[in-house]
Amino acid sequence: MARSLLQLFCRDESGHYGMMMALAMLPLLLAGGTALDFASISARQAQLQQAMDSAALAIAREGESLSDAEANTIANQFLTTNFDPRFAELDINRSGTKVDIKATARANLTFGSLLGYENWKVSARSAADLAYTNYEIALVLDTTGSMAGGKLTAMKDAVLGLVNTMSAQVKGKDKLKFAVVPFANFVNVGPHYGPQFKKNGKVKNKTGAKWLDLKGDAELPQVELQNGLSRFELFNHLGEKWAGCVETRYGGGKVAHDVEDSAPNKKDAASLFVPAFSIDEPDEKGYSNSYINSDADPLDKSAAGKAKKLLKYGVTVPDPLDPGLEWLPADAEMSGGRGPNRDCVTQPIMPLNTDFRAIVDKVESLTANGNTNIMEGVAWGMRVLSPHEPFTEGRDSKQIGVEKIMIVLTDGSNVFGNTRNALGSRYSSQGYLVDGRLGITAGSSSDTNRLMNEKTLAACDNAKAQNIIVYTIRLEEPDVKTGMMLKDCASSSAHFFDAPSRSQLDEVFEEIRDRVVRLRLTS
Image 1 (cartoon, rainbow, N blue to C red):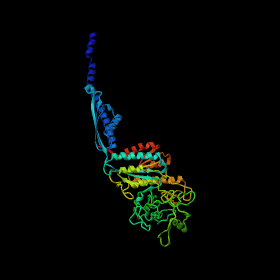
Image 2 (image 1 turned 45 degrees about the vertical axis):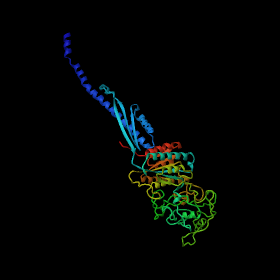
Image 3 (image 1 turned 30 degrees about the horizontal axis):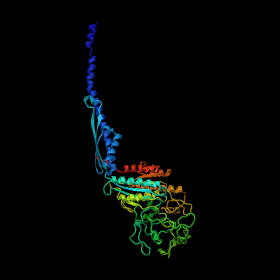
């Protein structure tokens, strides 16, 4: 029996088969383990490369003013976030705005130890530089009365941070230009564009910007100053120098000049810019700009009424068949801030330029006064970026490598300045409410706000159609309609920033800067 069992065991080959299978599987297991190790190495390599790319871009973004120590700090921060820094060895080389980073690390092996390898060396290299782009940036800044104090200070600090960091980043002649467009109820293009005068009070030929309405040719609804009367000559006659503000172009014709960047053309007088002139208002309760002793009614449309309104300024029409005007002395008393410049409280535009010191000085000098008219800010932001008049510093938007950017900041809702007097409002860039240039001759502040919002959006759409990237910032303004309008005004919802606190402005402008500056990996 025992012998039979022994013979049976000797003939049993199943165990040998299992051992043979186990020996045969060993190379397969080692191959699979090695594959897993190589997959781990590959993942480690990609992880290191991603960290290096991010670090290189971040360092390049800061520009040449960044110290080597600061560059090392930034790189180590990215390694800490995206990679295990215990194994990383950094080598950073910088030349101008270009940065080159090399790093090596060790990837632990699981199965490699069976073959005598505990870890494997991985390396990565990344180089980054600024993209070859020309930047033109219009800073459209609310300088209305509600910005006074801490908000104005916070805005200045944030804007200056943007100017200073970008000017340190972007080097090269004319590669970075800024324009500053302060806005309130009016925009001020600059009094130096006004004309000179002859001894008889007429505008001298070939003086004054040709895009201004020098002769009173632009026809637009107005209660007091007749068409054909040069407002510049009227300023001169009253002994006042034009302060530089302009009205909104009348958009009631074939072309919506009010919200478009249509080029001024003498053949189309409506395309010219009319100097703002605050009329002498009645010396009655409800008005605030009476500077001439007269009982003329601004709403009197009779021939006698029109003559009386002109006469108080010292202007007569001696012969109905001869449209020529004669000038007489005017009894004007312009004390207490009253007069034809009363509502021009905004500082002049600074066109696109590369004088960063002058740009800083301009921003630092901004003061706060007046009501909110966002549309005028957007329209002039579009115009300063344009290659044609009134300002010609902008490049053609179709030119390759040009980024046109508009940053609009406001702390308020559009305000027309509605009143209960016969004119319906204070003087605005759209004249008075009774003039009907906004689309209505009477209505509530809610009505005028809605129409101003519509015009603002139309100006924004025109800017975006010209390939201008529009960023909008709502600062401490809870009005829902204004927020929705500004969000729609921006190039996308990601280009709209809601800042409930002025303390957030630095962060907002830093994020805008990071989005604006184009970087590229060069290796």
